[in-house]
Image (tube, rainbow, N blue to C red; front, side, top):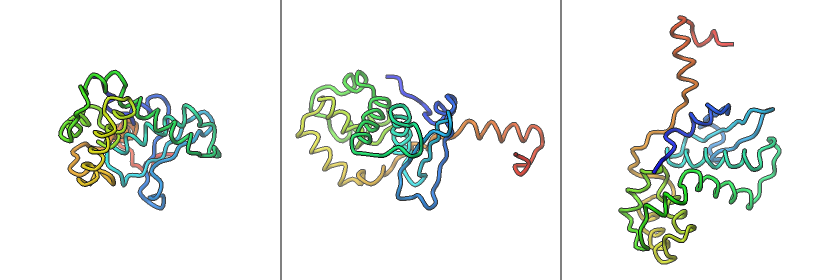
Length: 186
């Protein structure tokens, strides 16, 4: 099972600018657009590391499939397509099918497997169901159990650290090497 270790760094490597904000946009999980040829993504930092990863993959989906400008109209179909893209990108079909044997997936299994793909258990449960790997009954049972455990709103007990920018680290290291202050950037 191969997983993308740091999606944020991968996007930066491919030329995307990724910013995070915890200020006035708290009601928005994430959004993206193109500024000229440069993809730009804003993430809400008030989310778990697992959900930030999914948000980043979701926005990548928008950029790949719909992202021509900031004025792109949203819609249920586009949101579902971006969710499907993120699920497929982070949890490849063959990996999920190979990791989940039978329809009796238990809560403990979901909590263990979520670490493989570094996603929320809610996303993993939905992906397994959409792939037909788990039954409607198992899906419903897991949904109730995960909700009761607090996973509908977040990822309690997660030890996954949010992905970090390699670009910012490189800039700061370069500045230290030149004995420059942050204020000298321009």
